[in-house]
Image (cartoon, rainbow, N blue to C red; front, side, top):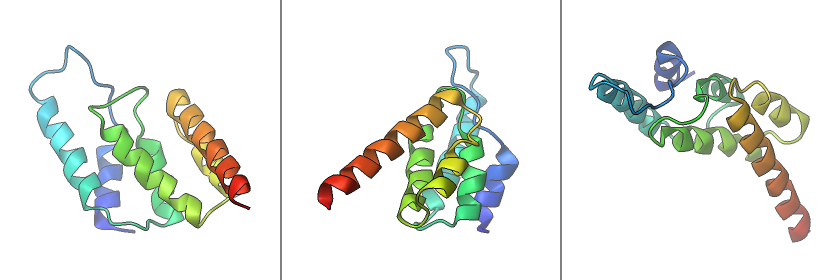
Length: 114
């Protein structure tokens, strides 16, 4: 597993952004942003298992979208039940629901192409 993924795992789940965030949050944002930006696709299923656990409950300075892009990239390699099981381990109901909806839309788009 890549060092960046292990470092993200050590940072833990993204906190929710808040209007009450202090200046110290800038360093936290920078840490997530730098590490997420260093990850080159494709990622492995094991790496996706780590990343899916990082989703904040709601939002975290748009970095949740970078996380989503990385997790969704494994659709090309892991389809069906295994992918659904992965996204259903997401600790955030909001992001789990969104990942499931986006996967259903992806499946529909693949059926249309056939």
